[in-house]
Length: 348
Image (cartoon, rainbow, N blue to C red; front, side, top):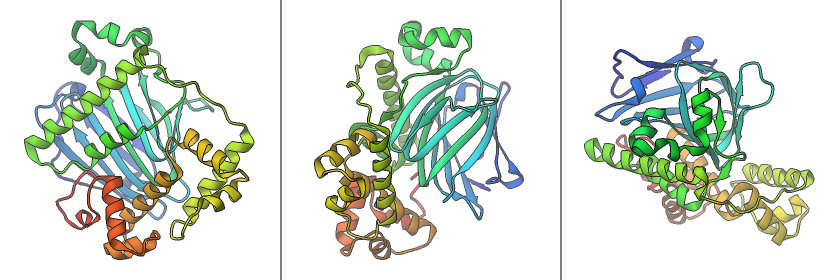
């Protein structure tokens, strides 16, 4: 495990999270935070994981009152962390690619599960348990903050702002904002990519990220307080969900080939209309956009981890025309694939 960029400094009243896993050197990674994540500067840190079974990058940002983790990991068989901390925390978790579960200590059922391209927000009076991650590659964006941050953005109205959550907070009980993880909408997906691929430096970067993330948190906290009524959920039969799972596995195994809807419908045993409708219902996006995102994520990994050229990476994910690949990459991830070759590109 390697760390880079500016080191964190700590004052009295620090908060701490301890991760235990074979992916870390000596099995333990301690992350200490300033009280309530308060900081008058942007502090960045990078953790590199490189083991026979798990590899990737964990990027960390400390803004004023907000701490952010951006993870891009690769593990064929998944991996787990034992985790504990000494403070109460709110967590907004986006599982851009992969699957996430948190099992509190002593529980066989997860407290929260977030599938591919979904998100949820939850409050934990303390954390002690196991984090399970599945999917290759995994791409996660997490924002953590404390009650102090909510009080600062909502003022004296914070109890109304957290009307549904406040009782759980006062009684020290865990709380999940939405019973089921929500699909990442195109609008939220665009905000996430703007944040993750932020091209700015210094004070502009700090102010840009602080504004973007704070606005996102306010919008979602307002929605969670009952101002937003989601569409009625349609529950699919277990057999249909398994069929969609076969489709997903087929897509991931054939990204280098031309993937046609007719073939996917055959894999699922559905007609094309039902496949497209049910796929979007479960995965929160169209089949075409899902395939494109997977291809761009795999290409990104090949450029960064394997050192492939843009043209080589394009070929490996099924593009014969590098210009078409570059356009799709920019449209999907928000920046050019050539930027991955530049040392100045950060937090992507």
